Image (cartoon, rainbow, N blue to C red; front, top):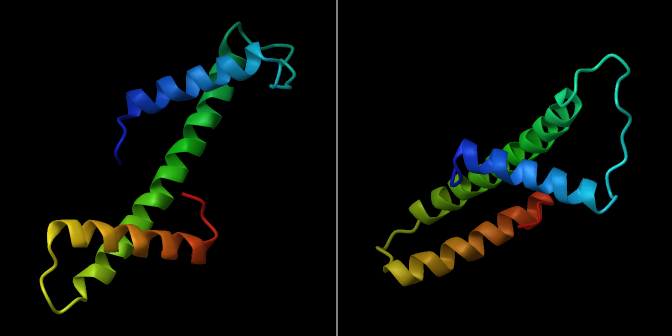
Length: 99
């Protein structure tokens, strides 16, 4: 994964707080919840979603690398980067994943 867990957590917290500040977050606080636990649970859900999305992208990266490994000739670095991006976009499109 390209992002550390701490960075993902900070992104999730910032996203939650920004959405809440703009009034784009609709939720009900549980009656018996301690202060801050409901926010923590919502941030955890956002965090889990981001991690799952990054894992899907990592799987696509691995598949694109497998395709490049099937090439018989050695690829130059720039050529490999271009072909990697092309194959990654194609695999993502086939899976219905938006990069």
